Length: 542
Image (cartoon, rainbow, N blue to C red; front, side, top):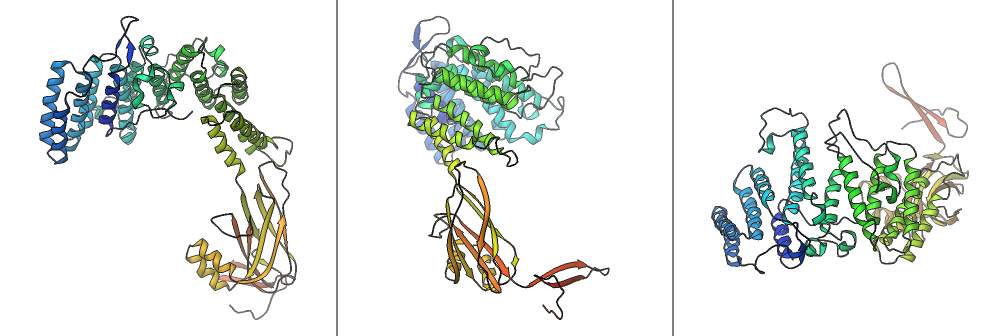
């Protein structure tokens, strides 16, 4: 499905945290200590620090960064005294932003401060902060990966300075924070995502991520699915070598998944996917479960270390669709099934005409049915994209560089999803054609060609059996006199680059052909011959 996340970057942390915490003030959540419902965060509604932040904004806008920092420190002290969680975090983030303007290594300070706050923060702020910290760690690595590749694990290492860490350390810390963000499953799965409506981009996200655990777990999984951290190869490397990992959720949910590899992201991804599966396996609304299944099946297929992964993948998709045929999310299942047929269809070999010949058409039919059955759904939109991709027209025409005068000639045409093409054959001056090409203006060049001397005009009906793949054939061109020609072929009789495809095929009609070689003195020698008979021509000059 579409990625559901909050808009987040280092610079945008202020906006994110502020929005997140404001939303925490109204809905209710489940207490970690018991099953009673209570406010997520306890403080007065509204921003009681409004005037203080106006001062900070004014100072910042006037370039008085250090003064703004001093004001933020004052707000932080007040917030700490009043135990105002929203303002505590907001001061941390605004302070980090301002420090980045005037101090070196501000990013490291931000991470350390956020880490300290996360350790003592109350639920549900703590798991959200850990998720953010995990993302920040990995963001730092991605922006500085070149520093990590040859760095020793012991060179100038400082535990509180990310600038000294090696790849193993930063990977370990990132994993730790993502794991901490989803540690309290019981509380997280009872906290509805509506608590954080303002930080969710997709309006229908609550169906896919109905709880805070869903939201944070999918964020963690997105990191765990990352290939890049798997640089170190331990003795007991975890591999997706069990075909049970790709079986339907009824089987996968009961598997025992273990690993001795503490840095295996694949293991953590699979483990978290299983936790999500078990949470939603009995949901009356299967939308979240279907989304989890698709994520798992695609992940396992991509990293499978067992045979017949593609076959098992499609079987699992089919069973998932059969299980929930009426749920609108099944449109996404159909899309993934159609993608399987598309991949097979693209592997078609003309030497094996009975194998995969009609798979692209099968994919198209599956998409059409899904669009009709599940209108106005995300899966239907995906199917429309695939439908457009399969429906794309293509056209390419090639001619011999030079052809014999006064004899019919042929051009090779390659095409897809076309029934008819239109041709115009024009005779032009070669030097003019070179000049038109040098301008790199396709539309003006076409205008010049269309205004040139028209020699022939006709249309060709093409064989099209509706298999949505490329075909090729020959086009007959009537005999021509000596000269330089351009064959224009269009998918309509309009001949307009920006409306339809137009192929240009320049060629000569000439009696002359030649061969070249280098002699013993490294000079070029030309052998000029009659193109028809192959006999050498005498007294030829360039």
